Length: 264
Image (cartoon, rainbow, N blue to C red; front, side, top):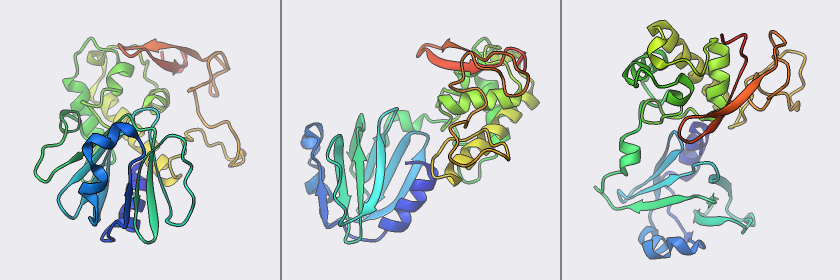
């Protein structure tokens, strides 16, 4: 559920009582989600990076962490659902919210604190009232000075919402080497990274979650040429022709793509 989907879910579900709750995933059985949410109504949906919250009129909160595989779908209530990977269905008279392949799902009681992973999130670059340039500058300044920029940008405790694709694309457009230590960044460079990341994320929200950072005027909308560097290992840089490089970075060994010339 992206920021755009959080808005869609809120508009479609808010204030409408649940007429059916289905939890086909066996691992959810012990939480008795169906019984606890019976007759409740969604009050609002929120996206915090890859953590997603459905807040209910009762004060309960459904927390889901999509990680790499999970996805929320919003469909008309009478449309048949694909059953493979289906974890949870929340159905009103008009819509069905279906959760697929989600590693972490937890229903919290009113007043129960959010998980530590959510409480510890850094500022969401698309959050209300957040200045992304200032937030990124402050966050990267707090990071361990010897930590590599590309690794730090994925740390959701520093800034929330930047995934691996946006990391590589943001640093390319900022002209910053992902292997530089954070401590070598000027405040203006750190602020520029935040501003670019927020712009790319906002464009993804506008495009219904589709990631398309490379947008030449002559390219048709259906083109698969959608990124500057991500996924383009060994291919020529779109700006200078140097071959794009890629290798794992950080403790999680997430693949980073970069142009050794444009980002030198």
